[in-house]
Image (cartoon, rainbow, N blue to C red; front, side):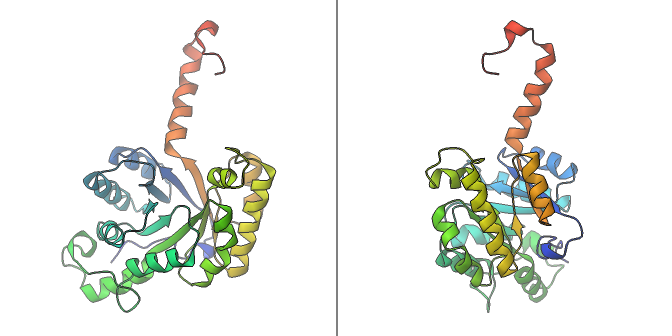
Length: 262
């Protein structure tokens, strides 16, 4: 059996599923995240230079711990989508999603016929022949998730149309890029951005598609919890590591050792 994807029925979860964006391309980091009980990891290939062997090891490390591996892409290449799914990825996150054509193209690349045009192979995803290909096709078609990340005003304006395709499993937000798109500078906490995120949530709710926020303050977290969100992105591993390293260093520094502005 394919490892069940706990994100395919997020709306019915009794407790929220929690994920982390992985920007440190290392199976060891993935192992650490998974063993800290995160439910899913988004492995970033948009901003991170990641060779295919390392990517494959990161995916397999997630699966070993029954942590759902998702791959974030910035460009749509059907062959690459097929390869990461063949390696065991359980979904695709599209950054800067803006059009229904993008959603249709990714869905086509993710699904086997008759739902799409993905090519078949064996290997690790079938247990090297232990799972019959017909069963694998059926499970893979229902088990992979397609997630647009809304990071621009254009994406927000077309979100309803993207959801109407029926291919979207849940929606994520990219408040920092959204702020830049709105002409507000690198300010994801601007009130207008938060209004846009609430609009995003309402569009998702109307379409009965889960919304996955990335709370940046305790008050934002409470807000989304009160709205009964069932998926949360808990930030990025790189920023968490940097914060922990700085915090651990501070007790050892004398006042004149602390850099100005720290």
